[in-house]
Length: 157
Image 1 (cartoon, rainbow, N blue to C red):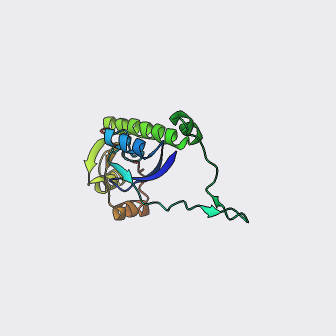
Image 2 (image 1 turned 30 degrees about the vertical axis):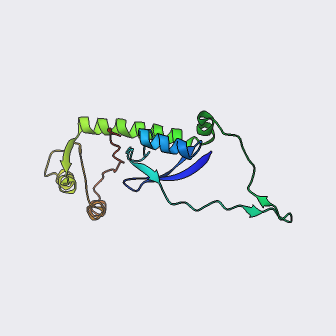
Image 3 (image 1 turned 45 degrees about the vertical axis):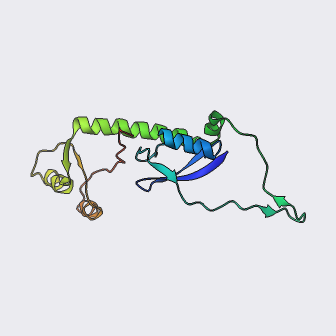
């Protein structure tokens, strides 16, 4: 098995286990690889530090660690449940996105302005969602305006 550090087009980094280098290439080319954060299938290898063999203490022989036979994917997932948890989290975030989209008004980049209007009673209280800059986010927090941020997992990936 090979462990690769992967990176998506949005610079999210995560790990992936593959039977061999060809298995990675096949999965990437078929679109089977997805970023667990944003869902994009545009994934490549990230820079990794190499695992360098050392000499076994006092023997002068290379110590590459134990060798192992190839492990079936189901066993790898059982040994590394993070991949399963990431997929489940991604599914739940997509579900949350659908609920927000069905029950709240999209205000785009006017989120901070609209949140203030609701907070100060200048607009009727209702659910909204949109985007803010990091600076706007800090100002809303400083004003005591309650809101939440969630990772926006795309449905198309």
